[in-house]
Length: 106
Image (tube, rainbow, N blue to C red; front, side, top):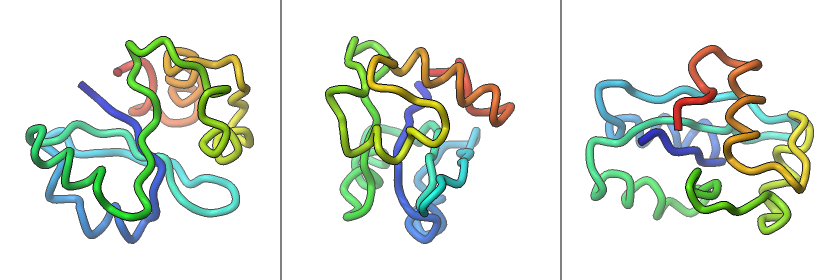
């Protein structure tokens, strides 16, 4: 499953070997940082990425959570058009319009 994280370019570069053969894609976020989407080699590699100090996961697509439950992430994603009522499904549609490899593939 493709998963989404907010992190820095440096952390992404340092951890790129953790992703599987499909790799990862990212969008620069206004104000710094990046939004990364990718699939990992396995759960161990995903956990290693998620444990990095500046990595913040977005809600799981099947969680039913909205960005209202994640105000710190909402602040970073708001410049992309994300609002508090958006779920990951809504966000993936926004991302797909901004980057051909980032939307609707959760």
